[in-house]
Image 1: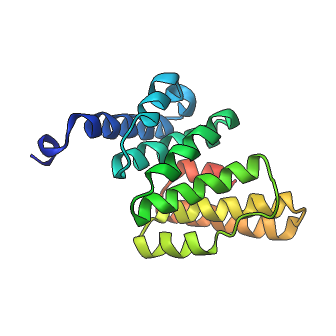
Image 2 (image 1 turned 90 degrees about the horizontal axis):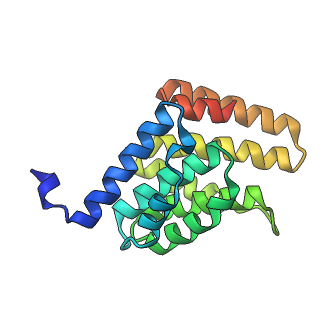
Length: 169
């Protein structure tokens, strides 16, 4: 019944987001990073559905290391950040972009991690911890990177999020 109350544009976004998540769960992360889905996101109105699709596409781009897709997805996510969850997603995407092409100081993840915890975004907290590990690795702080990666892996395992456990390892 709720599905019928969602307008057609948002329905397409939600459907694409759920298909993207299914592709990630089955190991086909690059299966949906095509021009059609990116165009769907680019033309989307700001809102939760757009943020959800953007989050899913960003995660897929990260998992299959398609760094060329990160920047346009990030721009759209920032544009769509109307609520706290969307804001967290946009900040996470910006952090991934920095990791792929560092310019200046690494972005602080403290505030976004606090927000994600408050919103109950367990998967995002795991991903942020894994990203902290990669930041430490980029800064050549191997001991900290290993400790953070192990923590992220334990978090992913306890939350039963296999694709983030893979990322953490």
